[in-house]
Length: 210
Image (cartoon, rainbow, N blue to C red; front, side, top):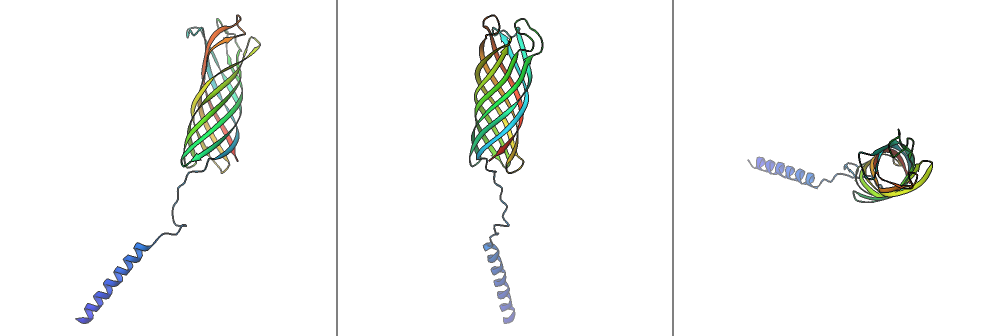
């Protein structure tokens, strides 16, 4: 009987010691699974291409409308700063364009339109791993070529986008931008006909990070 009691006590002690050792076990760093967002902080440069569709309403009248559409493509540069999952940034871009009216209207001639665009925008984004989702807003300038007369016009731009890191230094992006130039006195038509000019663009691009 005494032998059985000692054996039982020894077995209980062994179980207690094993449980305590399991409670004290801490996985090594190599065994821990870590999921962290990529650091987007730094400078970048890149290129983009896309399609734009703008309206030019004569005297603000939507029934007297020129539709300007076509390609755009150019370069961009920017800088990001990341705080945890929040990414703040600024970006400037310059695009050549062929955003033109395809046929004559009552107050706008075929092949007249926008042949250049530039923006300076802030960006506010949220990083999830290699993916960055962001909103953007800022200033826009366009070069209007009407009746062989060039004119610069200014306005505001806002949009949304997504960017994905495919390597440590290369990312791909897609974005939608809405641009509004307000009421513009178009110098090439009747000494300054007024048009309300606004439109949208969809762009894809690549960035190289430093």
